[in-house]
Image: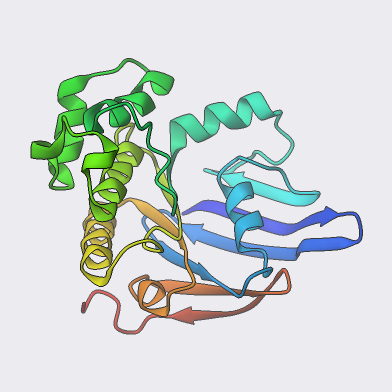
Length: 225
């Protein structure tokens, strides 16, 4: 069953069509990469999928419900309840420790629970760094804290925007291994990337060009990494 479906989505800014009649479907538990050159519509699509923007035309179905016409407050609630966001820029609060940064996400969802946040950090291999401030963590460690923060509320969908863009090869592999674990556990993953190696880790790659779906690529070696 599809967790996410975009039906004939367009996003129009004046005379510019950032997205032009795009239709895609993502099944529950699927791992999909979205690629394309600058200006292809990747960020616009991510903002719509992540409930941070609405399409000008078309429908967005999440768990079978059309959310494309919902007011922003409802979209904020949906994002908080169903979607875990991971960005290229870590967006960590500089004066909070790693565990407190994870707990911030809990605060907006339900109630902060330090032990649960510590368990999330342990899952990404960082429990021993829980009391460190962001400035005391490497870039790879900060991104792993962001993965823990995205996971803490048990989202149905992880949406990652260039999650390895600021990482070296070793830390990129650590993050990809975490994504593999999440996929094995049934989490749905959508990863926006410009890196072919990151895209090749996914089951399927959707390539955007000029606001349209140019092609889709199935990874025949998926699961053999």
